[in-house]
Length: 143
Image (cartoon, rainbow, N blue to C red; front, side, top):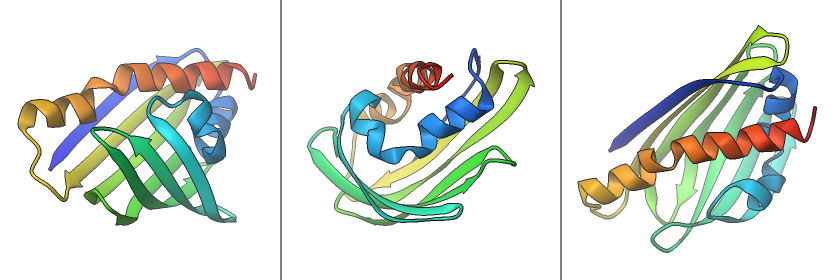
C-alpha cells in the first residue's frame, strides 16, 4: 500500500478549484495519463465515475465521489478496478484570502499485483506537484 499527500496554497478561488476538481468529464483534457472518463451517476453531492488511465498499462477503475462545497471537500472510495485493490483519497480546500486557496490532496492506493517500491513511489508520489499545477491551470480558466 502507498500513501501520498501534498498541500499548497494556489492563486485561485475555492469556487474555481472546486469546479475544476468536480468536472470529472474534463479530466482527459488536463490530467496527465487520463484518457477517458465516464460519469455514470451524478446527484447532489454524489457521483460515480469510471476512469481510464494510462499508467504502466491501460487501467480502468470506478470511484464513488462525495462532494461538499461548503466543507471544501471531495472524497472518493474505490468501487471496482482491474488494477487497484484500494484507491481512496480526498481533496480539502480552504480559502486563505481572496483568490487564494489552500489545497490539500491525499491518496491511498494498493495494487492487485506486486509493484516494486521505486515504481510505486514514482506512480503515487512523483506526479503530485505537476498534477496540482494542472488543476491550478484548469481553475484559472474558470475565474
